[in-house]
Amino acid sequence: QITLKESGPTLVKPTQTLTLTCSFSGLSLDNNGEGVGWIRQPPGRPLEWLALVYWDDDTRYNPSLRGRLTITKDTSRNQVVLTMTNMDPVDTGTYYCANRRLGYNIFDYWGQGTLVTVSS
Amino acid sequence: EIVLTQSPGTLSLSPGERATLSCRASQIIGTNFLAWYQHRIGQAPRLLIYAASTRAPGIPGRFSGSGSGTDFTLTITRLEPEDFAVYYCQQYESPALTFGQGTKVEVK
Image (cartoon, rainbow over all chains, first blue to last red; front, side):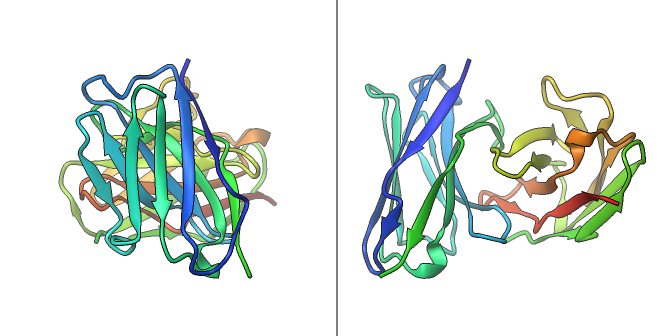
């Protein structure tokens, strides 16, 4: 059974860097085809894809946020880390990590999400 | 970027009724790389449909997807109480993944 769980700060100040960790079990990012992504949802707004890291260390980013995002994987710890620089109040929202369905850039197992508030 | 426009924004229906949700893409999705998710309040999104019409494992048969090109549809044949939620489409033809703005299915 695949499970994922997000962790990180619940409150960050404007201009700070956010670091979120996704800890997972039941999958290995050493395996061909695997990937883990991050998706967020600001309050009252739709889902927005942020980034994706693949088993082979390839990465993809939302072009509108490129330059602010970095996604990395640690296969020995079964973790994926997302950093987002220069945080702004509009970045407030629930951040989810999710496992990529093999062969497709869609997400079939999700964490419960973590709410991040950006405020001074 | 492929923009996905979902309609209607809100659908007010009663349990047992049929729900038809639309997702229109700003350019042709030739591979039919279009997925649908259900998002209940306080829960994680749930993958329902991928490749426009393939149900994900464990998804009940009352959910079906159809369409091609730029126009896609999610149909729920008979609404159950647990189906009242927000539904999102997502395209994965482009490396820049995008979601629609969502359709809320609410109890009439």
